[in-house]
Image (cartoon, rainbow, N blue to C red; front, side, top):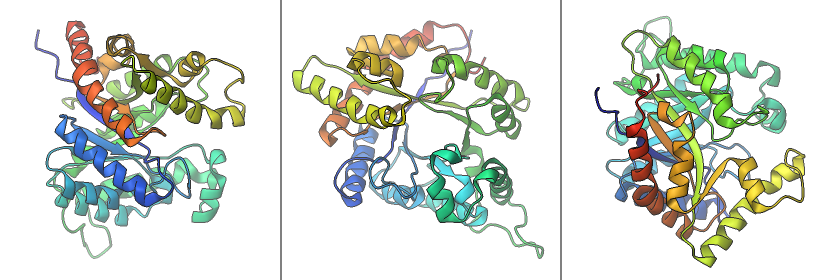
Length: 343
């Protein structure tokens, strides 16, 4: 039996922290530099429109252009560009420029975004009809892929400049449904899975397993699966200060869900960790929790979610602990699993 391919290691940040965006951007660039030095394969940044607190980055590609100039090897991912608010040709142009500036390191993650009823003000601001969210996303995706494929973008035959090269092979799409995953698979795109299946009513891995099934079954013959799985990890090293910081991170993460009524009040930190699907504890315990996730053996990339409301020093420590103490144990456990990637 051939050896299982090494699980790629990425991180995902929502670009939080600091009292203003300048500080958040500078800190996140430090995260990219440190992650590259630690051997991470990819750094992913989330997009949030009109957000003054959680999620400070509305324009992912300009940020990644800056990250490209501060790094040499790490791949640079958009996790993700929200398609309903984009012009497909402009998106293709910006993406190609970042890919050229980075030496072919862009991983272009796209999607329809969170349900429109959760962000109605954003749809109003962009003049988009929330009732057409998924239809508009599908239309933008179709035009984006045509441009990246080198098809004419206007009747006289003009094509995308500069050409996209191999960028089309590094396009990813996020979904939470089997029908969406089937469409992604048919196109040969990568599949991005969120850290938490919000509103599913069942554990996240259980909700995501049929999504992976649908994706793999729909891939064209000879196309290798690309499955990026986001998971939140908070390894503990027994330091009281570290424990307190983790408790504060959980508290700040949980508060919006308490306010919305999705989380019940009065639970312990441990219970909120379970509800949030955050793997925590000593590094070996975190690795064991990840290895027991039935979706992870089918992933090609683990995207650990970091830099969420904690200090920069704590984030950098988390990155190092995950790379040095968690992933080697996880990789050994996956290597003992006989199921091939994507099966």
